[in-house]
Length: 321
Image: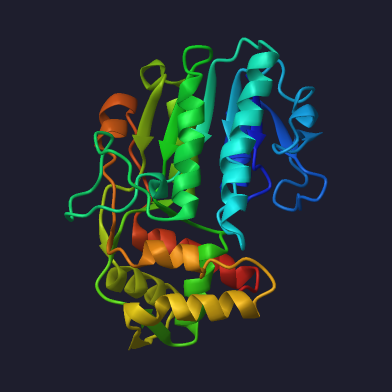
């Protein structure tokens, strides 16, 4: 099987590449010349240089593949317009290039996000019957990417995956909270609840959805099937790194102000931004993976305690902590 992976140099993409290679796929990674390939260096992959924002650069890179896994996207941005440029327009350019090459593709997989749906407003995990109502620019841009993909499902077989918070070795977003808890601080803005998924389980779920006939033209939520409070997440991380942090409560009203100050002081885009605060103001980021379990046989293997321990061990080994 021949597979094209966008976003292959990123956290999730690099794990997907490794898993595809284990399963005997011939993998091509679509990368920009400015990308850092450290997570895929030494792997038996072909690099194709291109940029989803430059449609012409994609035409020679998207032909003759069985599977296209589109993971490239923007999760942090200083300008909200950048989210739509990359996550929507970039997706449109890629799928147009695939169609233009008229390749006999088995599946185009678009990895979206729970943010494209938005939070639960009644404490019940959202499922595929819920109408999306994203609360952030990031979520709105991912939803627009989904709509673009679904528009072409009559021309090529497509599947959309909506993961929740994904964590594991190499991840820099959850790493922010590991560092904070390592310093003995647990910042809290009220009781919140989250669905989680360890990265290994996510990439296996992505591949299962690509290979399943049942998933063609459909959307699936993937998670480990449990709901965790922010206290439970903090406890699991603290146990993994051996700390007992002090709980500091932050009023929600001042969170946008703190994010604005942080954005002005930081030269790079940060996970703590005004757009992310729009998401963090909501208390239930939870989803129901039952459909993926019943239709695809998706069964995650890694729970929060072992997942956080493996992640913390990796951070220590690589001197991130």
